[in-house]
Amino acid sequence: MIEKILLVLIREITLPRYLKYHLVLVTKYRRKCFTAQLLDGLEALCQELCSKWEINLEQFSGEADHVHLMLDMHPNIMPSKSINNLKTVTSRLIRKEFSRMYSKTSIFEENIISTVYLSGS
Image 1 (tube, rainbow, N blue to C red):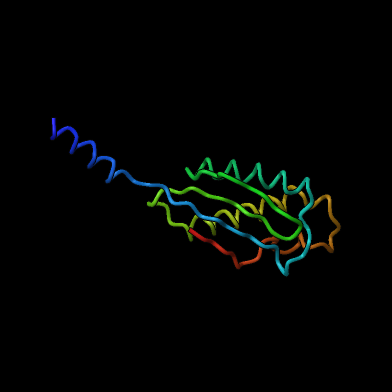
Image 2 (cartoon, helix red, strand yellow):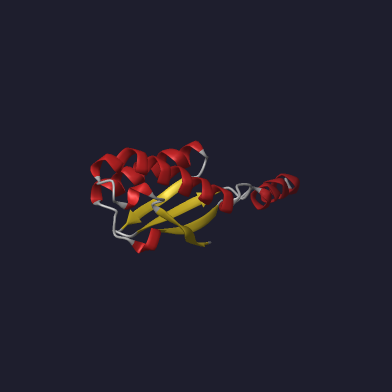
């Protein structure tokens, strides 16, 4: 009986725990370019990408010049690589999908999301 309890306790202790990250992504030069429609598209895109990469997107919110993401990742996932992939893919796909709504002189000719990000665990 004691052995069974010890096995259960060992499993509980050694099971991998997920790590939470609060990610803040800002637009390049903090330009106010995110509209409500664009934020909705960005949220759907982030949800799709995170589920494909086995990352839980717990919360998403944003304003005109930045977005907040609450991510829940397995310890085996490298946060820097995942965040870089998320930034690159979302920036490219948002530019592709929403650039027709904006003029040729808009920031959609460049990268949307800045190379700098803040992540807290």
